[in-house]
Amino acid sequence: MNETEKGNIAVFIMAGGAGTRFWPLSTRERPKQFMQVFDDRSLLQKSYDRIAGIIPAERTFVLTNNSYTGLASEQLPDIPPENIIGEPERKDTAAAVCLGALIARKRFGNPVMVVLTADHIIEPVEMFRRTLLSAVDRAREEPVLYTFGIRPTFPASSYGYLEIGRKRADDEGIEHFQVVSFKEKPRPEQARRYLKSGRHLWNSGMFVWTVNAILKELKQYIPEHVDRLERAVENLDGPLWIQSLRSAFTDLKRISIDFAVMEKARDVRCVAGEFLWKDVGGWPAFQELLPADDSGNHIRGDVHVLDARDNLLYCDNPEETVVLAGVERLVIVRTGNRTLVASKDRLEDLKDVVEAMTEREK
Image 1 (spheres, rainbow, N blue to C red):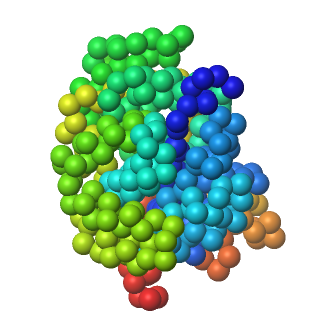
Image 2 (cartoon, helix red, strand yellow):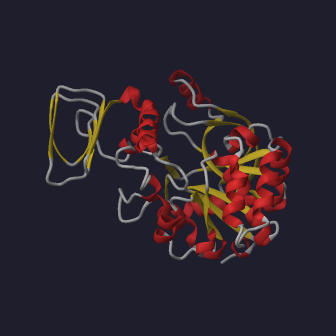
């Protein structure tokens, strides 16, 4: 283990999403980060596995919804139970980052804080670790905010982008760049221009910074988050912790860390990830992980196809047979007693439908 690995680091895995874009496989009771779809390890477990060899379990935290703390502890038994933090409400990533930074400060002083998510596929792990530790080293030296940029391999319109400027360092092949601007999810023609330019990377949503560096920015741009959560964290591990955290979250503005801080901060840098990265945000991303037949149908299950093209079909019941005949660009999912049939062009509407169903069930 090198000196970087021995240093003062705290890792926070964000795992509080409801996974509505992955319905019906992902449900309110067991959202996508806890699903064991690809093998016997869930997306949350894979996220932990990637850093388990270099960061001690006692310095690894999971930020999730308080409904899922039991699931998180069950899937990650090596992490101390007190490091599984349950948020009382979903207030987006700015609240999670702020809460994590304040907990890290209380526990460890001013560590380098690593923020990861629980819905990524990343390979090879060794390249990811090298890239992560390179960012950790530089963030320890300078009070800057680091994010991970991913080299785009196709003109994705479902990802945000980073526009990069001058190269700041080359750490044995791992390149560091100044971030000039953040770009929203582009239209297809804009995504093609981004890919061609060579100056745009996918925005992975993973970050590295010292606690002092991020808290300085949070205090400048969303001081109410810091004020409210700081008072709650004073009660960390005490009898008033749950109550004070619930009270702090009640009036927090729901906003992402990108909108709240990253797009406004003066010195944002990125490491360019040369590893394979997939954001498993919904069914379009899942499709990329399944092989296609000659007609572009991505299939898992006992499926028979007749004149059908560019469909995604997932069926987890080995005793069920499905026939596709004369249809195009559909997503069809069968699991348990739930079925999804949707046009690929309308998948963005799935979140609204699932949230409406959830409200009716309350």
